[in-house]
Length: 205
Image (cartoon, rainbow, N blue to C red; front, top):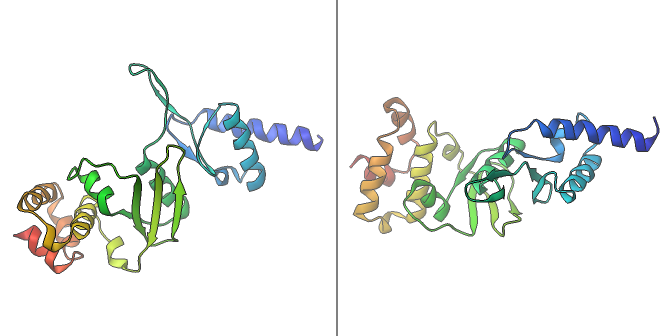
């Protein structure tokens, strides 16, 4: 088998693996390192995207697009949250939404920010998506922030910190108290100890 035949055979193996993926799956060239080199993987996925077989979300990030026949949409990109979580899985780091993104996730704000901002225990980076939005990871050395057992508690604390103690309204306080009631008591007891003192005071009334 010559070099061109080898490349063609490898690309077929990569394509066969992608074909069986669920719609909406996000993947990277590194997911195929058991088949091809990272450089060859990047070139293969780039060619597949140009042929319309897959979609390029950002540099080195691809997906199998979903569709919605009722709305007449053939290519629905994964959510920014899905992309961020998949990146975190790949890099084996933890991420926490902050600012308007955290508020939107909790339903405390209807505003959809242009940038989805997270703090992370990994490296600082910015990913520009094909839909014009950005994912921003900011480093944080506050290790306790990544020790929450409940994602909901983590979001609540992050949102309250983003708003600030002096800017919390009675309406928001009442809403977050209702939200944390969904957290199992034993997990709540663990996570509340990780929150700043003023957040604990607000949540526990």
